[in-house]
Amino acid sequence: SIKVTTSSPVNVPTTFSPTLRPTTLHPTLAPSNPPTRTPSRSPTSSPVIPGSPTRSPIVSPTSSPSNSPTYLPTAFPSISVPPTFRPSFNPSQTPTGPTPSPTGELETLRAMLVKASPISSENLFLEDSAQYRAMVWLVENTLYVSYPDDRKIQRWALSTFYYSLYGDNWSVTDGWVTHKGDLENECTWHGISCTESGTVLSIDLKANRVYGRVPDEISLFVDLEYLSLSENQVRSIPASLINLPKLKVLDLHKNRLQEIPGGDYGSSILEELYLSYNGISTIPDGFFQLRSVKILWLANNRISS
Image (cartoon, rainbow, N blue to C red; front, side):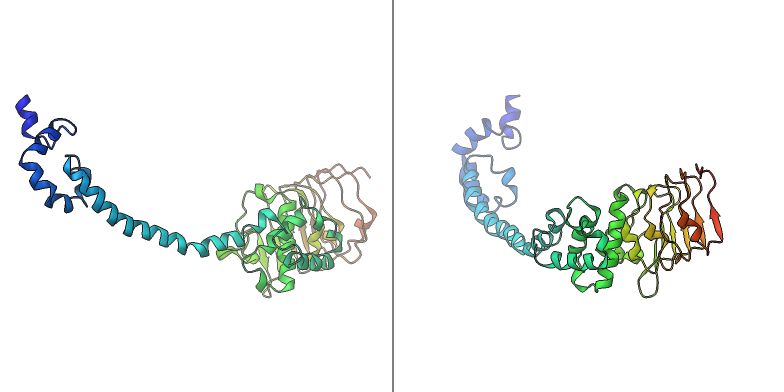
């Protein structure tokens, strides 16, 4: 067994036997000069073990890898300046809100939105409101600067609709509050159809786990003809929804509505109204002004007067 270990010192023992024999005999003279420069680049992990090669790998490999590998990594991180610039410029505005430009784009947008939707004025200053969150989201849109004013208002109204009705919990959210890629255009978002000019024509979010109160900003969709939120958990709607100038079909059956909002509905052109399977207990007087209605579902409610 002793003969076996001494006959192949380079393969098996790495600390004792090979160090004693190769350093005193021929192996030191031959491997120390030529082999160390050549094998040091590739076999460093293996030949470096016998005493003398350790000097060569330290000098040669360090000079070679330090110049080339370290130079390349540092060169690429330096190129990553543009990537760092973009993420910090766009996404940072979502968490920080108006801080990046309190008197710039955000204030200009807020002034425009207040003018377009006066009822939203107070909420546009409340950081936890759906209206404020939608405004901040819009400002950080990649193509925000290129949007005309009417499109900014439409995108803000849709994102307010999303945040008001807990869009993060919807069953399908394809495209919603997206401002990059193929679904950047709001007309490609799930359930949204638009006119040729790009205004919202219909919203269909049937059985999509929609929950809460339809916001007043729904009144900004002046070309909306069809709205279906059936089989969800909608709890209330604004009177402005029924009075939308072009709305013909409103489907809210199988929700959690407790009442029909009062108001003057003489200008409504609604033709189909589905309100069955809710918890409605009373019908307001303005409801009887809906002269254009051809189909009306009110079954399975709690109407007593």
